[in-house]
Image 1 (cartoon, rainbow, N blue to C red):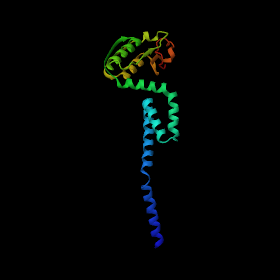
Image 2: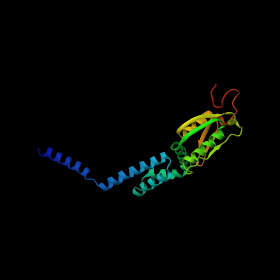
Image 3: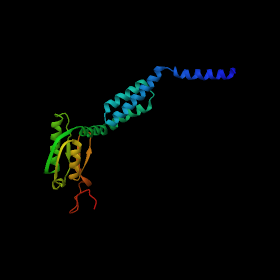
Image 4: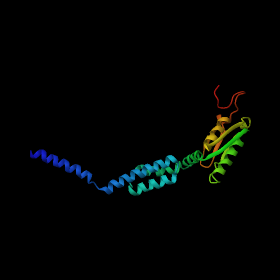
Length: 195
């Protein structure tokens, strides 16, 4: 009878010891995990500054945290990629109240969109559109649309589809080129479309 009581008592004490663990360690571990996750989320959002702050704080709290150290080392290499992501995300957040293009060329439509974005952000964001069309393919692809209260990225997507164009978000610019690298389309077919 004594043996089972001792085992129950020993088990109970062991369970209670776990509950009485050092709350400071538990809080630090929880804080480290939360900060690391916040840093990863900041990377997803393209916020390199917040990501660096989070990973640096993780290393201050837990200097042996290898993943945080890895993320900080890679931030420098991924800086331009993160800046491009921020540029793309910003376009999603800007609402253009009205768009009305009638047989406009793609370069003119993109320029007009840039002016609308500048107006809506009160000059705080410049998309820096760069149109690369050395063969003048966009001149023969008219853009016509009427839209109201849509995000700027949606307007850009429509322009790109109508103009058979592709876009690349860079650190300092949004580069637009004809689909297929600017190759002339066969007579009667739009570039980038399948037969």
